[in-house]
Amino acid sequence: MSTVTPSTGPFAGNNYVTIRGTNLGNGTDITNVELAGINARIVAQNTTMVTVIAAQTVFAGSGSVYVSSVHFGSSIWLSYLYNPGMSISNLDIILTCDSWCHCRCHPEFRTAVWN
Image (cartoon, rainbow, N blue to C red; front, side):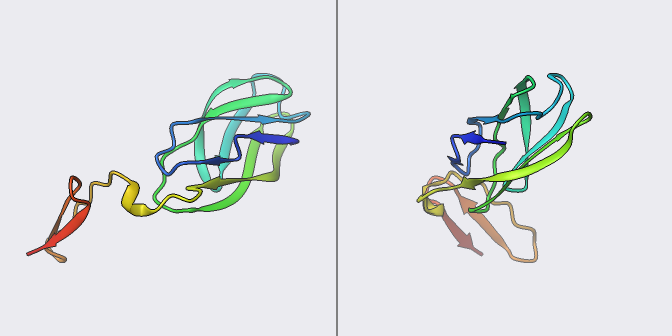
């Protein structure tokens, strides 16, 4: 792999990421792509690039970009960073707690209410 564009993305995911390099696959046989350990959805591929849609995550951090194809196996090289400079309070989170913790989350206020 030679480039990952963009190399950063939001917690919410749903952004396109293009990975370029040689021998990524035969053009149709890339079976899995992970960005920082999270599976991404493949939307386009050829022998020198694959484009994916990043998945949503709740964890900040960076990790390896992993591409797996039937003909060329697995490649791990570059990194991808989720959540550059974004605080968790900026996210729309829906939290469902069980009866053990007795809480409800109000996304409109982004605060937990304890009963």
